[in-house]
Image 1 (tube, rainbow over the protein chains, first blue to last red):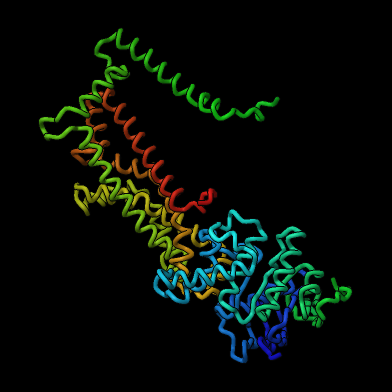
Image 2 (cartoon, each protein chain N blue to C red):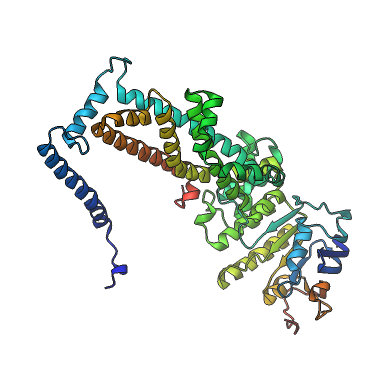
Length: 250
Length: 271
């Protein structure tokens, strides 16, 4: 396994508020990293850094040993808790979108054979997430679980180097959530994905992850709590299949 | 049962809705006939028969002065002005509103000037339009466009800017550049909203049209109403008002139909 993502002394500050401090991490290719921590501990900021939605105030992030462009890029796919799919496109169009953008810079739309090829790939991807019977359905007609399946298929069609999941199952029923755990685990194994998942659910973090990062503040100044930022205070490797007892920091 | 919990069924609902309209028509008929009996020269409340006679005359007889059938030439002139004015407003709204909503730099540059223009009462600039564009068609069309475009631009820009940021991020992770983002994500989601705000703007558009026609024109629905007002010709004014309402309702229905057919996902009824 080689280093895919490297954080070198990364700080994020908003004005005089420090959100993340001294984040030093290496994420290996093929790992499934769960990120947990209390609200306001910089989990989302960490995800936005990897996504390129935000740039570090100090420090450096490397992807495949090259500095990460501080802008969203197809080498990093994402699935959010909500609003990940386009409401005005059918399932098939949602998944083909990534292919169309790549091959048709002017119109963002393919025609003829190129379109049939793109649709065939999109159909394959939809079948992989179990949506092969819902090709022409709009997201509004889908359940929450189906929408998340669609969002995953949409992201995977670009073969991202790393897939970012931002509380992807937070809004789903417990039963559906279990199905989704199975689906994500299967896709992770089959496609050899590298996944970074932010979650509130500690059990989920340990069940799915090969490594669990817990973000929190190391130090708290009672007079100026905003002056110390959070960092990865626990970094636990998990052997999949066994569920260690969650530590007491929860 | 509490009053607030009594809900009419569909058939009954239509019937209940029709009662006030029918009652109003019957009351008008009774009063107008009574007044016509008392005074054969009564003008203020013409009977339905008198209005029908006037309507038939206006829709069938050729006006010897112009060589046209009055009602039709008025309708065509007004709809043409309204159509061109609304089309200009809609097209410019689409371009400006989309740019304002999608590109933060454009929003920073043009947002304030659009906000300033939007607070100017359009009728107040009508004299400027008459001076700048003359008394012909251009000034009337311009009044309609200037009157409704600022509201529509702000509405559309606000709608596009409030599209979930997750969608924009997702599109970028799928490889979309700024242009593709505008074309494939923002534009399709802006169009149903544009039609919606156009439907709301049709009322003001008619107001601006009739105002412009009332002040300087020689043909048009608004011109006719204000012309025959001098003769207290309520038998012409009332059918004209009814006709304008019919045109407005038809326009609204057509716009709604277009939106439902073209953007089924925006109306929650699938495809």
